[in-house]
Image 1 (tube, rainbow, N blue to C red):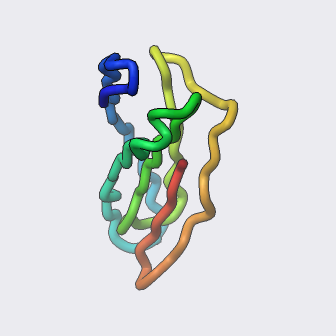
Image 2 (spheres, rainbow, N blue to C red; image 1 turned 120 degrees about the vertical axis):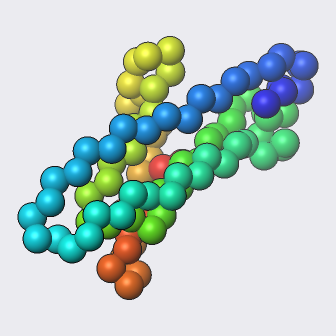
Length: 93
């Protein structure tokens, strides 16, 4: 990503999956998408990233953000899980 000042910002996406199975059906890993800030947001003082998990099972996936190895807790939102055909989705803007 390149900011309006020409600075290059790198975004690293990584995930750790922990699964516990209690007769919950098949385990399906999520499809993970990271959506960058819009060009308009990059011109403003702050910008948001969106992480979307979809198509996973069983329910209970958690999303966390880290910056320089430290977990970010402020200004982090996570949506409720949505279920469709025994698969789940969750967004973390």
